[in-house]
Amino acid sequence: MQKSDVSVASKGGEWMRLQGKTAIVTGGASGIGKAGCLAFAAEGASVMVVDVNRDGGEQVAAQIRRDGGSALSIAADISKEEDVRNMVRATAGHFGGVDVLFQNAAWYTVVPADRLELSDWQRTIDVTLTGPFLCCKHVIPAMQSRGGGSIILTSSVGGSVAFPAHPAYNAAKGGVNLLMKNLALDYGPDQIRVNCISPGIIETPLTERAVRDPIKYDDYINRWCFTRRIGTPQDVAAAALFLASDESSFVTGSVMYVDNGWTAR
Image 1 (cartoon, rainbow, N blue to C red):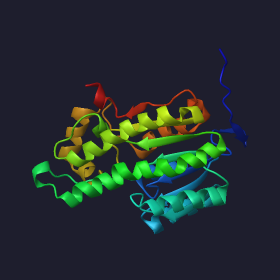
Image 2: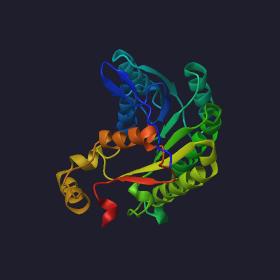
Image 3: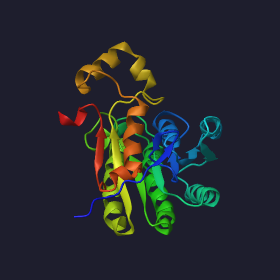
């Protein structure tokens, strides 16, 4: 049995787990995506910050550059194929290739099925399921030309268990989990690893209102959090960093739950 060599570089005596790698991070202007951008850059990666929020994405890229890292930003709607195509071209053109995709962008509305407008259903599917597909479709050839890569799709515990009044979101995230497995199967021979991260309740702009409601906060803590705290974007970014690095070279086709025990019940 051969032992895998984990390649890391050193900067100022500190290990740089992503030195020499280029990462695309979608939804990178805030929340989990922003935390991922900062974590990847801190470990030596060049980062393309992608978001529909042009100004927010550029602020994150500028922060990385101020801290001595390498980053650019691009505005893109991942539900639009031309935007995704341009995103990958711009990244490969500037940085020389793509090694990591961390796909975070999502959209949803909380409405039961009998009152859900078709336009809201379609928008959820377009951004939350079709978007990840398009990102993978266009990044895979870039990774093949580099001899491999790591694709990390942010799913949700909602891809495995149902939430009340989330029919479109549950359907989309369940689809993301199986999309990941299909891609891991098809592109493993190309040394492309594909995994999902499934967060539980994470303190992001999407959950901020609920987290600040003391009653809802206590309910989440008591029902879903074994260690009695809400997750942070940095908790998820740490998992993404592992999956992006060569430390996870034998990990593909997996769902990594970052949910404080939610799915253990």
